[in-house]
Length: 408
Image (cartoon, rainbow, N blue to C red):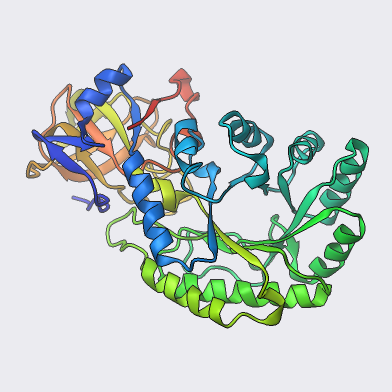
């Protein structure tokens, strides 16, 4: 038997069935028209932002990185909760504008921006986080051609990373941003061009659960921002401190100590160097805001045994939940939180593996977990499915197609 990850707080049973937003998932599946189905809780989204507001210093703005989950109903909820949005493609620009979000609240990072993406962003008034000198020159030229003043920030590749992070975005050679020593000349070039200078974007890593490591990285980020502003001989209007806040996925994971992160950042803000006294600050969070608010539901289509092992074969799989299958960057496969949704709260009685409907042994959503006995027709639930699920998985694989999605 292999342990399961911790189920996030906030999920309850109604009549023995998992409930989201006060409604049984069996009713939600019926309303949606079947499975597989992602269900997202608006109440949990609101609660998470409220927790952040309470823990973080008042002067810190909160941005949502939509790559975690670009589902439009979620964006509309966040439009009433957060201070800005971060995108990483022209396609995501189309999604946020289509959702009615003010482009002036949007910043656009990511290497390899095409000219048509730069043009669309400049035309809309989006802040561009420049990834290179060449991208800066293209943006300046496009702005001149359009007769529009581009809003330009610089993404900095810091010379440190976020310790213990699941994905390191800074430190050493990286395709993201400019190495720190090359930043001051580009700041002067941007300002001299007549563009609107918007500041720095400094992102060192993601999916960290160590509050001390997050706080230390934020302190290093502030020190780097101050040094680069001083060397650029220019005020720093804005600084995106990145994100990195993780959520528990696996056995043994513990939640990030949000209060400690907020306390440490507040202390940093109380002692800012002169270069940063007038600077506006934000953090950019994706999975931390949405990850625990989503659950993936699939129906058991077959129950079978092979060499003494039980397999619950579902109509879902890795084509919707690539990360839960262990094929999204993890080295050693570990179990996400999972449950039999139609027997929620029932004591486990057997060891079983939850697998999908794809013709590959990689399609495994839970490996030898301890569950109540499940039969054909039962629903399984994979938790922590609110981030990097539907939009980060190969839904076209084997012609299976996308899952349904709903916000409750």
